[in-house]
Length: 238
Length: 290
Picture 1 (cartoon, rainbow over the protein chains, first blue to last red):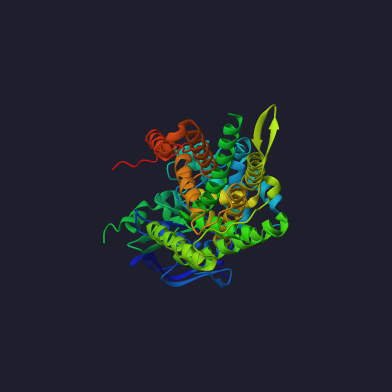
Picture 2: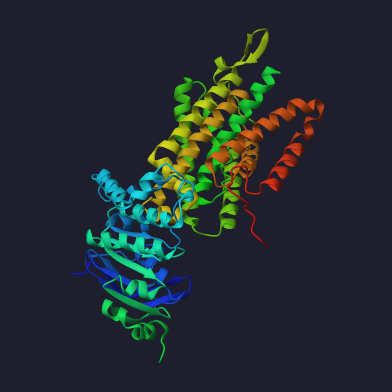
């Protein structure tokens, strides 16, 4: 049974529909990538799932419950966390305080210490900067902090919006290595990226969005086939 | 001279408390709540109308009434307008302020109501031949205690952390699980507590309560918030303190020219804002290129 099932989702801002009729499923402990050119509605899709904006139509079923239109603070408590685009860490707060805020969305207040320890093991660099202002961290460290903060609530599904944005290639590799470990620990991941090749080689399946609609679904085997990837991504040859 | 310094510090502390109350609500809602003045006013009326009871009972009752009015404001007006253009919220707060002034006028009359609140805090005492008023000492002690308590709440508790996070980025705070309704209600409740504390200190000094009693201190505290840094609670407290100290000092220094105290104060405010447009505690320029 799918852990997250998005069916015919319609979402946007005001009267503008940014995405329409988007559907996909995600099984526990699996990963799915969402790619597409700039402005096609990838971030809108994640915001609609996480409760940042109210969907205009369709359903979002998470763990057997319809969560479409629920408040973000309720959705995170059900076990679905979003790492937003641009990281959105609280730069004026310390690293420790940023991590503490992640505890707010835990369903079960017991086990908080274990969750913090687990996150510290996964991101040891944060340990050395715990009392520093988060705004003083490098871009890669800030991304790790944003992911760590979301993980402290021990989500069943982690949504990531462009985690590679603004990072050097070596740092991107490091971040994606951590994401692989997170999936191995049993957390399902939905990752939005503009860099299609990065996601197709990482996720078990990737959906390509164009003009707010699902253009195609790719498997990791398609990642090797750059022609098929280009055709899906840019609509070349149509 | 000593009394003047004590007066300046006590007025600074008082404005600091009022600015903190405004800053708490601004932080979570981006709302400049002009009706904060009416929270101070209702607290002052409650203190005067319950002056026959022991001070602790009167104060407890005042806090309950003020917090109730603050929560009522949030629930009946601001919650329904949440997410609309900030200019509309501002106009709504003006409207609410005016409506409440009229309500107070109908309830308590247009003429000032008066009673002696905490008579044991009146009078003065001598230290090394210098005469010092008890109320100025009490004001300073009370302000320090309240600011320390607020500092502890904001810096050391989970509620304070959520308030600081929401002040910086409410949307992201909600994505992490911060409950918006509860947090905003908590901010209004705390602003009500602070308004009651401000009213207590004001009433000790001036027990003549009219429907516009809280207006002056609220407007000057807003000025304090702007010069301290509108997005920072520390900035709000600091800005309020500066405005109070400067105003008190100007009143002393200008002598018969004290009618110009406000003019000098606002010249200073303009200079500060020209040098640091985002306020004293802002991280950088708040100016956008236009």
